[in-house]
Figure 1: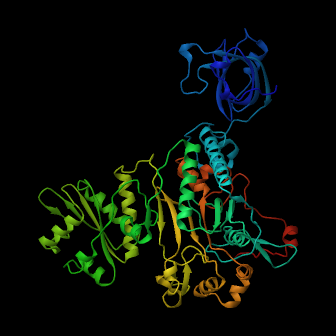
Figure 2: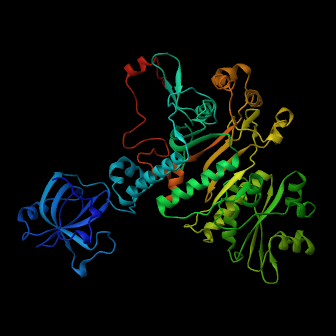
Figure 3: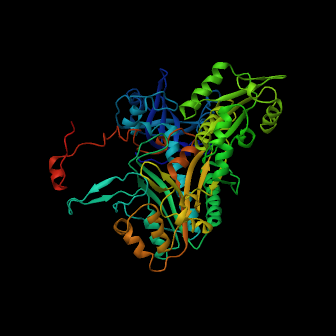
Length: 587
């Protein structure tokens, strides 16, 4: 029986028609004289009624089916009796009276229910991913992903972008993370690398005069995993010639507005706010600030440089900072709750956490005795504190204070229910440092990547003070998660060679690893820049899920394993010999 309709295509307009449906048995209910089957296909569910008065053969066949059997059903569309309508189903006003059924395939009993909100170990879900993807919420995530990618492609095509594929088997170049390597059979001892990103190729496409490139690119990084990171992931990769930062911001904002409208029906506010890196750290303790709630960090460094409380004054005198959060209406926290926040601060690098509870006529804290009345008034004023507030302080190296207060801010946002989960707050972060010094390697490393251009006024700093140079880089943050990042690139050969030199690469290393790129730069490279947006992470946020694994059809676990296929796996001795490889036995 050939399908004539999807389940949810059928409505009151079709009453009296003969239809044929194909799908899975979602549930079966035997009421004696009638059997009811909820038939599920990709579109959703519709109720099918089997009556011996309509067709006895179909009725007896319905007695045999079980959950997840694959069936074909032909029958007449009828209105449900008013008292049996189901408002929770799109098809809840109609049902199919079956006149014929065919069992296309049987099914074993699944290891978990094919329904939403199941409490099942994730490894089991991943082992039986083909069953997990039948669940409506997982199906909806995959369909959302399809709509998002289609909208992106249509939007960029209309604006003159060309979709170009770049190689998966490429050369290993230092880009920050560890490469996945692929041994060459034809050239023993030599390896391809899977791309961490198409970065070099998309810049070479600008040299080639493509001007506007994009790709829904597969990328690979052999690094430690977490909930929003996979060893293989998908990004929207873009590059443009003859543009600046504002051009990229405007394009991405317009694209995301279209993506959200077409994919979820949400209208987002544009233009997005722009926040400098230093300001983001100072106010929110993070370069990925969640702007769905206020609770800004306040800098008290100048106020604390000469106080008697040595924890504060010593931090300032040694080049550190003193900053604080005003947790509104939290003076009622128990001592245990405050101590728990203190433990969290210590776990993230603080030596401790000072606090003051503001009461109606007094300040409750072990540290207030170290402050003059005038100084305390200044602190209260700076933090806009009122009776009932709890003040939390951080005093240490600026990086420690930023990290600790940023984490406490997020924790308070959750505890106090300050975060509106339906809100969408985008922000551009700009003015990143170009480089940071790696004490372990005793050299500078690129914050973003070595192809990022320094700001024009900072180019001269590369010679003597590279650590002070700022980058023409930008990140896009949504609700406290980085969903994209990019930069205006270095487009002159001599500038790129200078950057490689600052990063500690010898002339031989530069030539070996990047010689092909530098050769390309000798043939008229236009000014260019771009951005990459993490498709997995963006869709995770759009779907309001806690893990990217829920929006990828076949993801790996946090240990980079596929429970369904049992990859990675051993290979035969013959395969190893062909690749001139030998497995070293580990003691």
